[in-house]
Amino acid sequence: MDNSHDSQQTPCSGPHAKLGGNMSRRRFLHASAAATGAAVWAAACNGANAAELVPGGVDGEVMGYTDTEMLPWAPEYHKHDPNRPWPTDIDPGELTHPEEPAAPPPSDAIVLFDGEDTSAFEQPHDWEVENGVLVAYEEDIVTQESFGDCQLHLEWMAPDPPRGDLTDRGNSGVFMMGRYEIQIFDSYTEKIYPDGIAAAIYGETPPMVHPIRPPGQWNSYDILFTPPVFENGEVVRPATVTMHFNGILVHCNQVIYGPTDWREISEYGPHPPEGPVRLQEHNNPVRFRNIWIRPMENLKDMVPIRDWPV
Ligand code: MG
Image 1 (tube, helix red, strand yellow):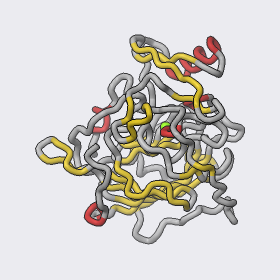
Image 2: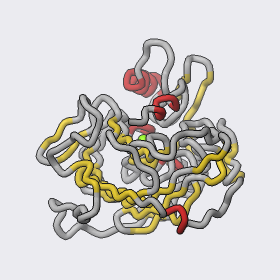
Image 3: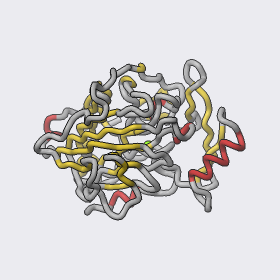
């Protein structure tokens, strides 16, 4: 088991803001919202760097940051910029049989969650299975097994009624190799910065379009992932993602530019060629079902690289 993903958990990095002192994120969010209201509020990181969400977008309803660095790969925008264009909202249509999985596992898949068994994930953990559904609770969970090139399928549902405000609304995520987050978020009911909405490569690249279903309905992710390649400690090939969200293409050979940190622009650091799948807990009982993966050893040989180096 590769546990090196833990080394990435530095204070004030990642989509969880690791808060300093004794204040938990949950308590901090509650205190912040109460102190300043919903429009603008301050977030602190280790008590040192102030971070302020501000309104933006065409109608001023999108919340994000403008005190962050400009993105090298999209230099007209800040990291988590509220003024980055919101992807077109697409109605993906209703599932004909919402009680059934959108795509049952094929015969060659490794099933990570079948509605009952959670032993593919490290034990013990606090997530519970309720009526065949895995519910996020208290902590992230990671698979026992590690993966490199792969095809991953999962289905998720945001809480209904919606839970959490701003950065917390139905927030979860799937981290490829335990490091690179494809965001899970109720961006149907909360307008957060576009590089943080559902199916965004968190903090890097929004989905091309936004075909999310409402809270209480199942969404599906189908992710083709290739890991980064390192030589002599340097990245020589970045990770890539091709992805369908509710059957609709949202990333096509999209380069991942580095670890998907919150507010920070981070460079690749060498790590093993395989890593676990990590599902994020972010203060919301986001639900999961039908999770399976197909390792694909030669996928990166078929995937051209563009927009790299930046
Ligand atoms: Mg997340």
